[in-house]
Length: 287
Image (tube, rainbow, N blue to C red; front, side, top):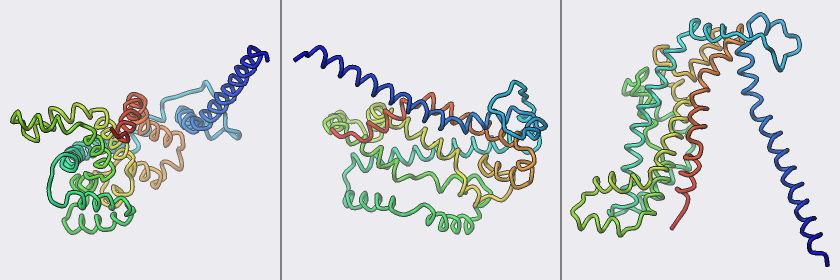
């Protein structure tokens, strides 16, 4: 039996299989990225050249930035952008405080009914978010929190999934560290900030980035709780652009506005994508 020939045949099969896989992944990447490429290309075309195209061009050298100027001057896009930054930073900061403290309590502290409380807490994940929106809207209206940043932020400061993810991560830290710290006279909060948070930093960074993306893309709740333009976020601001006719008449400028809104999240994800994957993987491991 010629083992060299068998090994060579197996090597050729692996190479052929890998080639097919990479070709498939390359084609799939082109399919996924094409809508974004088309959005950017359209945003760089002039209004006249875009309307003159009977057959859309997949490439052109006649590019212009006038659509980006129109997007910022025809509507208060900069104001929407600032509102979104305030909403995102405020919501993420409060969410981190609530999530870290709740995860610490469920993972390390001992109190009566802890397991039952955590089970009931996890059961909230079974409730569709659309059902909670109605209750939140009535509560915000009764408390006169509509058209305020408080009304925008408060319903989003707690997340069952993020608390569960961080709680599982905290639980992986050996109990011996906690008991040794207690013997040395270390308080619970000091142990949390000096030991647990530094060890679980990748997961906390992951939760932070995912929350930022979630807030930036938030649409339903901001649309319900705000009807004054001064509190519009980029998501319902884009909808306002489309509804007032600007987006329907000037598609390139509309695409320019969408590019401006999308780019920060894309850059954020590209920078921290490895931390996101590492944090999610770490949160799901036991031992």
